[in-house]
Length: 112
Length: 112
Image (cartoon, rainbow over all chains, first blue to last red; front, side, top):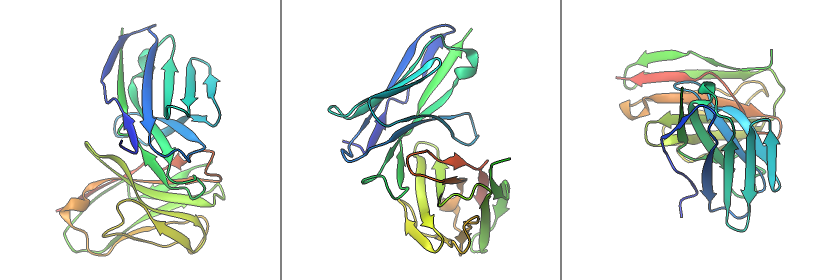
């Protein structure tokens, strides 16, 4: 299994749709996980952190399944401005060194 | 404004000519890190630092050096750049590994 694996997409959805991305990871010792958003040629920006079973922030919900070693990101009521690449990030080892592994990203395109 | 500042934003250089990309953060963060991003390969960690004078290799350290003499600065040094180091580089920092990193705006480097 790859250390961090994401479906690259692209996911093409209409405005208002609900879309979900999955990310699988191999490091069972990881305690915290992250979803970042990256717009074309720009820096990644932290979207959500996930420590326990999940986290919710407005239209965005992140869930963690430790037994199956995957995290998911759910976006409800998609907006045109949600179009971006979403990066799943997992610490390497126990996560106390700052060493991170980035997934290759899932591209979302929201259409009018 | 809390930020990570990288310079230069764009750089074209020739093979073998030593260069330094600077990175500075004004948030008093302990952890800092350098990444490169290439099409199809995603973001890969070059070096990271857990505090002043504490640095370690990431996944792709070959051809790069770093130093952390002060908390706020974490320069990336290419002693003898080669064309395969043409890439988009990001510096990032965080106060805690469970909080996620803040990224700089990126440096687009071309080595000819």
